[in-house]
Length: 243
Image (cartoon, rainbow, N blue to C red; front, side, top):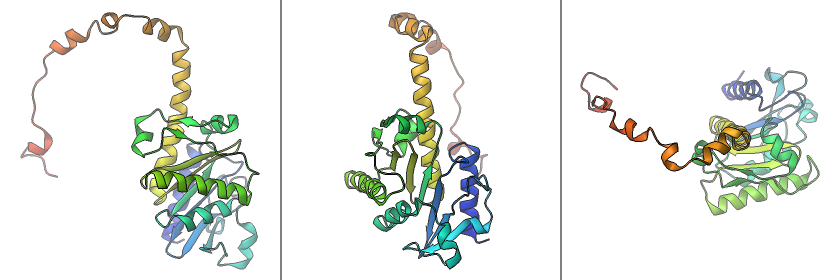
């Protein structure tokens, strides 16, 4: 198996283990030079994302399979991948995933607010948009995703490219597989954190805590500030540590 196929195999397996991909579907692709490697249909249901070489299809940039007999096994959402890759020369990996926490927002057809520092570090906008409801796996859906990504890119070329598909999942794009994996995980963690925030906000403890005065909240802070700690040199100032 080629190196690029091995890398794709590694990341889709990790996505499945993290319950970001499931056994119901999803698909991932990566571009290398003039080729695109995309996970084939039924990678989820037949393989549970433990892919061998025949479950990663090599195509050209137009979606034509290198092995003609594999053309029929291209994923239904493949046109989303090829349209994004065609529009963005700096994007080389596209994930369509079914993350269990992000799916809550997608099923409600609601934008997801960005609440974690990690998601903000990836330059995602304040909300991850749930795009307009278009027929699933249609050309119109792929156009809607790509237009939204172009809008984000025009606002900020460094913006994180991601959106929710109504009732369906999410699409995330990045410069390579590692970046796209990290962005996807950051968004799923953001969704999970948002849910936990709602649970905490509705708890009796939080309501009581918010009713406290600032003096009550931080009654031990002055004591903590008086606690002495030993000064130490920074590692980069030490002569006994090699980097």
